[in-house]
Each structure stands twice: as structure tokens, then as C-alpha cells.
Image (cartoon, rainbow, N blue to C red; front, side, top):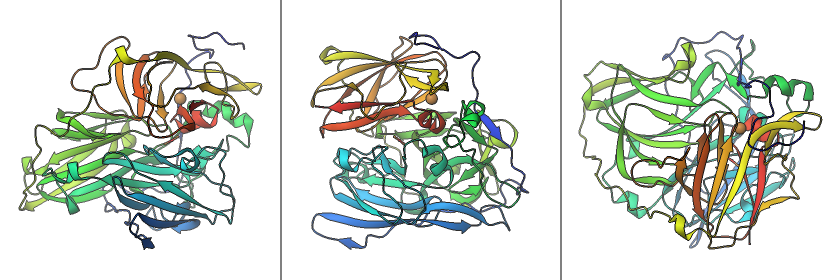
Length: 470
Ligand code: C2O
Ligand code: CU
């Protein structure tokens, strides 16, 4: 197959493939929602907070009564939550106690290149690396996860992911729900073998398997913070939920049942300009939404489900809220949350095109950017530091596209400008056969970064490109 840009080189549309579980699964909403533990710095000084996360193999109870081997930061899945402050340097020492190399990327972080988790910056077994995050950025729900070249799908599936929350004064000044009513929710799907393990098809090791999982790997169990279809008891008050789609390949369309409003207050890049009152919130892999749900709209004893309208049967369920009694609630959602500068397309130095399509890879099929598989030595774009650029992204099938370093705004989707004020994003979902124009300004650091599809199987099948800020 040779390159012909603008159209898919695949015959048919490879859909993500469901791995069926053979383990006995719990009835939905019988397991309480766990909260990942909050990491404590081992040292904190005038300029920085220092954390250590040891990556190790562990056995955890995910399905009641069964032991599941995971690879976890701190031996847990999800890993510990890091709570950081905008403008305050955070150094995370990752020690690799696993038998395989790892790479850690702070997704949504504005990070100098040497700490950004470039796919071949390996931390070998027994070695460690200090990742330095200046956090010269606004409050936002970020997450860290493995990013090893060709193995990200597998290593994240085994558990290498956690939350990284950045807070700042602007957000602290708002009366949003906080403390126990500020709840991170990492939603991801997995499948379980009879013994409780989470098998993953070896895509990189076994090229023959690759074709079968071209579309990505789906699990049939929906986990929230590592628990299957859990339940959370809530009071009749407002809660802030930081929704993260941490799945390899599954998109979600969140909605409440029997109904209700979800107020979105933030996205990938932090607070929105104004709240959005929604019936459904769609998140592709890698994306986040900060939402507020007001449970005083329900009665004590009500059971409110968080559903996934993009999934069917058990994959259409996510978790449940059991509404308790009245409680004091001083929170509110201001009609103005933040001010967001709109980047001006007239100021763009250049417009670049990137096609995300299937094609041939090492004699088989794979996923390409501009007809080329990822090559660490080839740089696809060299934006100048400080320049504004428009990037026109096109897709054959759905691809959630993520840029490291540069947060962007969506200018148009198939030629249409999105309604409302601009929003900062780091991942945008291209649906089937779409053109999405994004605009960004390259600030912060010079150096080599990647842009890639956040369907992790697509990423591992080479749908990634280098850009270098010069
Ligand atoms: Cu969340 Cu480059 O990845
Ligand atoms: Cu993709």
C-alpha cells in the first residue's frame, strides 16, 4: 500500500475489539468507590516539592475475592494522586521496580523536554529518574501515565496511571465544591481472566495479533478509580467530579439516569470561561471534564446512575450515587469562572496539515501521521518559540489527538466554529472522517515533543509525530 493522503488506506473500518472477561463479575454498584491515596512529598523546601513513586508489581483486589496482578505507581492502581500548586516546582522521582523499561509522561503538563516522557527516554529496571515539573500553568486536572514506545497500551492497561491535580489562587477564590466533595474519577475499562488477571494482547511482541486489535482494545468491565461499577454515597449537596477517560480506546458519553443536569466547569486545560449545563458529556481517551452535580435536586434514598451512552449493556453503566440526607452546602457555581484569551487565527505564522490515517507498517497494517509511521529521528514540524500556528488535523476513523506541551483551542470542526467562548484543551477527538482545526501558541520550552493519537493501541502502532519548538 502506498501513500495517498486524504483518504483511508484501510478497507473497512477497524472497530476497537472487546476482550471478553471469563472471571465472575460482581453485580453493578456493590463495590464502594475507592479514592486513590494522596501522595505525600518526601521533601519540601523553599522552591519545590519532591515526591517518590516506586513502580512495582502488586496484587490488588478489584473483583471481590480475586487477586489481580497490576503494575502500579506505588503498587496501586490508580497510582497515588499528586496535588500540586501552579507555579511551584514539583519533582517526581520515579523508581522502576518492574522488570521492563518505563517512561512517565505528565499528560497536560507544560514540561521541559527532558522531563516530558519522550517515548524512548527509558527508565530501565532498577533505575530511577527525577521528572521536574515547573507547573507554569493554570489549575487543571492532569494525569500521569506510562509512555514507553510501542508498549504504552500494555503498560497503562496493567495499571501505570494516576491523577495529578494542579491548583491555583484563581480557582481557590471560587466557591466550588471542595474537600470531600471534590472527587477525582478515573474511568477505564478492563477485562479479567478467570484467575482475576487482566490479560492484554501482546501487540508489539506478536505482529500477527496486531490486525485483530487495529481498532484498539476494549474491556467489558468499567472501572472507576480501579473498582468495577462502584457506588458512592453522597449528601444532598453539590459535588465536583473530575472525570478522566483513562481507557485505552473506549470513548464515553456520560449522562445521569433517571436524568439530571451535569454542569461542566472545566476541561483538559482547567476552568472554562463559563459553566455549561449539559445532559451528556463526551470524553475520548485522554480527555478530562470537571463537572458539578447538585444532588439536592434528588430526594434522600434516590439512586442516581452515571451511565455511558456510548456503551451497551454492562458497558453502558459506569457507577451509581446513593443519595443520603440533607447537608450544609456553601458551594456555588459562579456564572463567570475564568477569562480565556481567544487566540487569533489572523496572527498565525503558518497553517500545517496532519492526516491521521491507517496504512502499511512494517509489512502489515498500522496507523500513520501524514502517511508515515513514527520515527524518532524525523521531525514533522518546527514551530518557533512564541509563534501562533494553526494545525489542520484530518481523520479516517476516530482518533483522539493529543499534543504534548502546547494547549490549544479548537477553531473549527468540519468547517464549523464551535459555539461559546474558547476553551483550553490538550486532546481533541476527531470523529470518523473529520477535519478539526486547532490553534496554539508555542511557549515555555524549546525542544522535541510528540503529538499522537491517544487511542493507545493506535499510538503503539506508530500514530505519533515529532515536533520541535525552535
Ligand atoms: Cu496521555 Cu502522550 O499522552
Ligand atoms: Cu487513533
